[in-house]
Length: 256
Image (cartoon, rainbow, N blue to C red; front, side, top):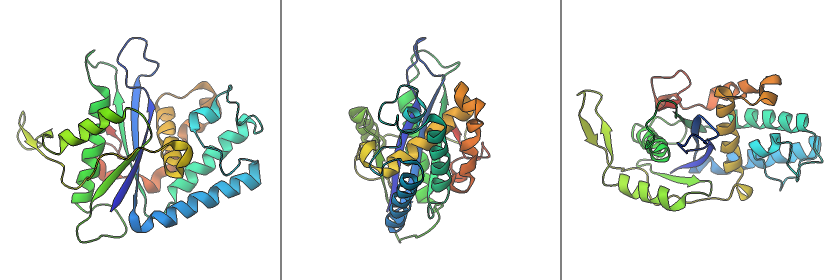
């Protein structure tokens, strides 16, 4: 069984008031037989950060809030040190045992006003998760008949549940062979409804939140991030990127 933890960065609105040009979904995938090893690595990382920088083990790593000037809970840690913690976190994620990350980036520029950003991004992420399982392209253990489950951060629960249920019966994907045609690729390998998690209680959600945040910063960095050279932190994830997700991007980023 493959477990995919998912978080977003940016927003999925299409109005002129939308604060972000990009909407990003990142999915961190670990196999059930490597889950405990990955959890232990993340827990030991939090202990090292506590000893080195005073970040308490139970304190949440939320990338955007850690960089914010207005964060209250982390005032005992300076902003440059918080950024250092995030860099170390990226490096830890890059070395999680046989984990992979699938990234979807929607560029809202030029899209129609009624373009459904949320559904477009999630459909592609789920389809790439499904395909990678079906083609047995994830590293590590391979049981005879693998399946996958999705564990997203809290938010838009009903909309995502409806989308996944729809994709079990109607999931039309454009054909690569016949232009203008499509195939109904009903979900076979992704099972159950999405199981939402509170990021405060999940090291895995905190990890994938950090991935999504730095993918956004790679494309539209905040001034502080750019000044510190942290807009390149996403590139430190080289070992964990799922390049099988698409042939159209050297880092495997699925662009919409």
